Amino acid sequence: MADMAWIDAALVSARPQAVAALLRYFRDLDLAEEAFQDACLRALKNWPGNGPPRDPAAWLIMVGRNAAIDVTRRRAKQAPLPDEDQLSDLSDTEAEVVQKLDEADYRDDVLRLLFICCHPDLPQIQQIALALRIVSGLSVKQIARAFLVGESAMEQRITRAKGKVAGAGVPFEAPDAVERGERLAAVAAMIYLVFNEGYSAGSDNDERAAFCDEAIRLARLLLRMYPAEPEIMGLLALMLLQHSRIAARYDKAGNAILLEDQDRSQWKRAPMQEGLALIEKGMRLRRPGPYQIQAAIAGVHAHASVASETDWVEIEGLYRALEVHTPSPVVTLNRSVALSKTEGPEAALALIDPLADRLDGYFYFHGVRGSYLKELGRSKEAREAFNRAIALANTPSEAAHIRQHLDSLSAHK
Amino acid sequence: MLYALLCYNDEATVFAWSKEEDDAVMGRLDVVHQKWEKSGKLKPSLRLLPTSAATTLRKKDDAVLDGPYAETKEQLLGFYIIDVESLEEGLEFARELTVANPGGAYELRPIMLYNPGSPVEQR
Image (tube, rainbow over all chains, first blue to last red):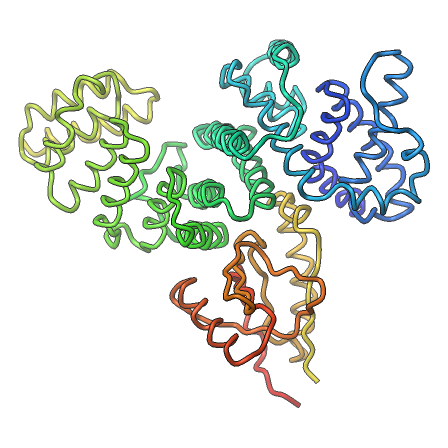
C-alpha cells in the first residue's frame, strides 16, 4: 500500500506538466485530460512491477499521447499528430524523449495550461474551478463540495468554461518574452485567487481550506521553472507566511482571531522560514512588486514573537511602497493602521478621511475609523462608525467583533 | 569514520505530499533516528528547505544565482552549517570561502529542521 501512496503522489505532482504537454499535442482540453487518465491507469499497472520511471512526467506524456492517438484515430478526427514511428517502443525511446522534454518545453506548456485556465473572458469562479479541475485534477464532486454547489451545477460551469476556452482560439505557440511576462502575472493572480478561496473559507470548510495547499504547490511548480522571478518568489512567500498562521487564526467557536491577538507559538516555523528566505532572495534582485511587498509586510509580522514587538515603522514604509505599485484606497486604509501605531490615531484619521466617499460601503473602513475615534475619546462619532460597520458586516463573527468595541465604549461612559 | 548520509528524492513529489503523508514519513524516520541516536551514532541531522529557497555563489565570475547549485561535472564535497543574520551575511561568508578555495560554487540552502543528535567526536 505504501507503494501505491508513492505512485499517487508522483501522479499528482506530474499532472500539470503532463496535461500541459498533452494539451499542446491535441489542443483539446477534454482529450488531454482523458489521455492523462489513461496514462495514470497504465502507470498504476506498470509501475508497481517495473519500478518508477526515471522521469514520471515524461513517461505519462508518452503513454498518454499513444493512448490518445488511438482514440483520435478511432474517432477519425483531424488533428495534427506527431510522427508515430517515434512513439511505438516505450523502453527504447524513453531516454530520448526525456531529453527532448527539457525544462523549456515544460515551462511553456505549464504556463500555457495555467494561462488557459485564467482566461480573462471567464468569471473568477470559473477560472478557479477550471484550474482545480484541469491543473490540480480535483474531481468535479470535490470542487462542487468545496464551493457548496451541486455536482451537476459545477459540471455545467466547467463544461461552459471549457467551451469558452475552445471557442476563444488560444494560441499554442511558445509565448515571447513580453507575453510570457504578462501570462506569468495573470497566472500568479489566478494562483493567488485559488489561495484566497481557501484562506477565506474559515474554519468550517476543510475542503476549501485545502485550496491553500494546492495554490502553494502550484506556486512552487512555477518557481521551479522560473527560479529567478522575484514576484513568483514573493507570491510563494506571501502564501507560505499567511498559511503558517493557520492554526492560530480561529478560536474554538470558529471565530476569526485578529493578527495581534493570535497565539504566535502556534505559527508554523517551517513555512515561515521558507517564506522569509524567499523574501530575502527576492529583495536582492531589486525588482519589487506587489507580492514581494505584501510578503515583506507578512514577514515583518512573522519576525515579531509578540504583537507588541511589531516594527510598525517598517510596515508603514512597506505600505507606502505598495501604494506606489498598486494605488488603492484599501491599501491606504491598511497603511493608516500602521500609521496609527507610529504616529497615533489623529494622523491615521487624517489619512483616511479623504477616502470616506470611496469606502463608504466597506465594512472594514468604518470599523477601523471607529477604533481611531474611540482612541481619541470621540465616543459619539465612534459609536456611529461602529453601527455603520455592523450594518455592513459580512459574517456574524465580524459583527460580533465590532459589537465588542461598542460594548467597551458603553463601559467607559 | 564519520559519514555524511545524504538524502535524495524528487522534490516535486515530496512537496506534493499532504501534511498527513509528510507526518507519516517523518514519524517512521523518527523511529529509526531514535534507535541510532540511542547508540550514540547519530550526529546532527537536518532537513533542508526546497531548492527554490537556495542561492548559489559561483566562484568563476562572482555570480549570485537563484536556485540550487547544478553543474554536473562538480560534486558535493562537503558542507558547513552557519548561523548568520541574513542571506547577505551568508553570501559574505561564502565569498571569503571562494577566495580561499579555487573554483566551484557554494550553495546557501536554508535549513528547515535541525536536530543536534549526540556530540561529534572524530575517531
